Length: 131
Image 1 (cartoon, rainbow, N blue to C red):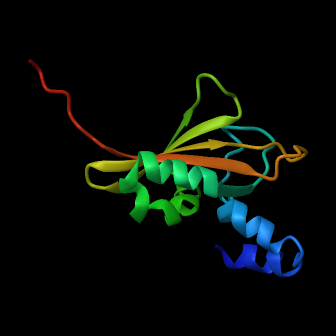
Image 2: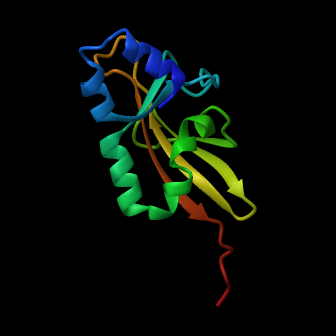
C-alpha cells in the first residue's frame, strides 16, 4: 500500500478497515494517457478480488504484482482495446524475452466508481516455428 494511500486512510479512520479489505494496491496514474483516452480518473487500484484472480490464474505474477502501478506509469507499448473504448492494454518488458500484459479500465472523473481497475498477466515472447 502506497504512502499516499496510507495518508488518505489516516483521515478516514472509520472507513479504514473497509478500504484495506477491498484494495491490494492503490496509486496515481502519472503517465499522460490523454492521447489514448480522453478525460480519465488518474486514481488507480488493484482490488483484492483482481489480485486474487491474477495470482490464481497467473501464479508467475507473484513477483511482479506489487510493481503494476509503476509499470502503468512507464509503459513500453499501449494498445487500444477493440471492444471497450475506456480500456487500454499496456505492455511492459520485464526481462529479455518476457513482458507483463496489463489491462486497465479507465474510470471517468465523474464516475461513481472510485478509480481505474487493473488486470494483468505475464507472457513469454516465443517465436513461431515453421513446420
